[in-house]
View 1 (spheres, rainbow, N blue to C red):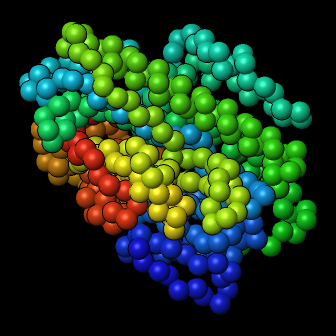
View 2 (view 1 turned 45 degrees about the vertical axis):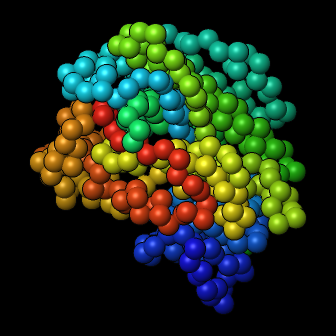
Length: 400
């Protein structure tokens, strides 16, 4: 853990497990440290990098308030991993892995703008309590998106463990639902904070008092988005398991882990009750099982939490970017990215679309391994937060 000394303008300290933190992310951390509703200290995970308002890989303790942008637009984004009893040699042939990915793409809608053709049934839609003065969020799109991957850095992977067995892993969240919820309440928070002249270090960190109608509605709607994200991953993993059984009949599934890394939760820390916001960070309570994925060409880890209080019992959510999406597409070549993915089955690179507009001559290399920090460096930096249990290497990757 690296201690960052307080500047005079800061009210609370910053604890950082991140080496060589970019200046923009450091400024965001300093903004958090002088925020009127953030208390005790700011914790930065080793995968920390610049986000919107708050750095991704940050954890904060908020007193009696919620900050929509400190959760982010993909509420409930997270990981699910499953351990079958299938030897990795069963999928040694790359042709078999290609056939697996082909079948998955036929069963699971992948990429932005791709959803099921019909609305999906789920008890969570019908049983969700609508808060007083709040919105009834589920739209037809939300019902069609349930059980779909989305785009960006969302992925489905077939992996092998160091002890020679297959694992299944995927990364996704609440899709368009979480984005709409965050955008709605962030705008309300900005207007409210401006009206009462809240001393904000950055308007992107606008907050809602938890005892206000809007604050409580945000927290309740966030919980709904978390449930949706959890079910979204569960449904895709159910299809993944079913597809794998078609290639390995009779296989058993030994354990399943399904966790969030963008959320806020009411928790006890340092003898006080806080709304702990984890943006690009996961819970790592003592003996809690977690997932820390690497890039599409590097290792991922199943880990055990150590319950370190200084991190608000949290850990990193992945490797963390070292290149923006645009920078990766402009500076990397397809040849060097292909070389970094030797032995991994994956879709070839597509044309890059910057803000949904085609960029001539550029390929979308934004998820290449070179765009991310070395995952083993990230793991080594947080060995006081987690204990690695299982190391996994990718065999086949399906990206959003």
